[in-house]
Amino acid sequence: RSVFGLDSAGSKLVLEPMPFRFLCLHGYGQSADVFRSRTGSLRRALKSHVDEFVFLDAPHACKHFLPDEPEEAKSRFGWWDWVDAPDGTRHRFGWDASEAFLSAFLDSDERGFDGVLGFSQGAVAGSILCAKRPEQFGLAILIAGGLPSDLQMQQIMVAACTSSGALPKSLHVYGAADQLVDPQKVLDLVALWGSSAEVYGHSGGHMVPSTKEFRDAVCTFVQTTCCSNAPVTFGTSSSLHLLMFDELCSAMQVKYQPRRSYASNAYSHAKKKK
Image 1 (spheres, rainbow, N blue to C red):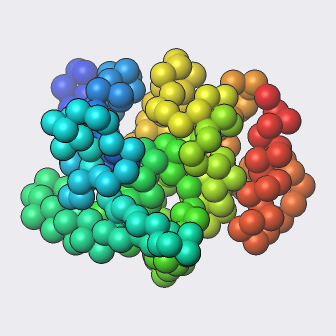
Image 2: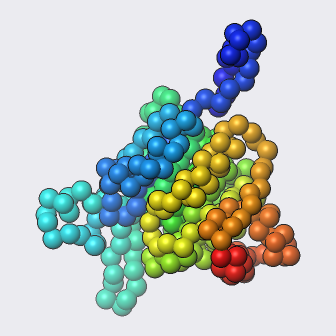
Image 3: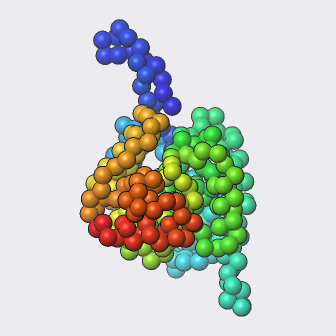
């Protein structure tokens, strides 16, 4: 979004970027308040670009990984949940209700949103929203969110991404030491997203990174998207891997590959760059 205003001399109209508004979706077993507290340093870094961060609680109370304290357990939410059958299979449920909840919220919101900030399960939910509603979101910051392993959720994601036209610009963040979301799953989603996706890798685990390098990378991504529609490539260092999808493929001297093959090669390339 942009707006016309006067320059510092008050003599000429100039086009200035308007501050963005972000929808923020927490991970499984968290809440809006928890996600707000864990993104404090990132939000402060983005204050010149983002006018408002709106945090929502997912509609489902979690059934797993609950604390012993009953009152604390009441504030653990998820965008979907699961049950394990006696034969060892896992059945997920709840996304349809969550999608309806999010859609109703977006449809009733008068201001609208420019971007999505999501973590883990919330990043997957945000990905599906952006893919299904590309006209409503200009960018997405997706932390520790990969292509779901669950076949049904995977089909929902693939259908959403492939049925849409141009997908919003996205920054996909993975942790090399993440034990809950395989970094390869994040890169699977990058490959599915296509040329509007960028990647940031860090050495940590399943978390919102707190380093200055990460905050700078996100600020650069948001500022670039805010001020220009032209794609920009970023340099890399041992601690910062922020690449356009086409640059990743060029660096590996390969053309676009099927999702699984690309993810494996891209992850190997990122590890070698450390």
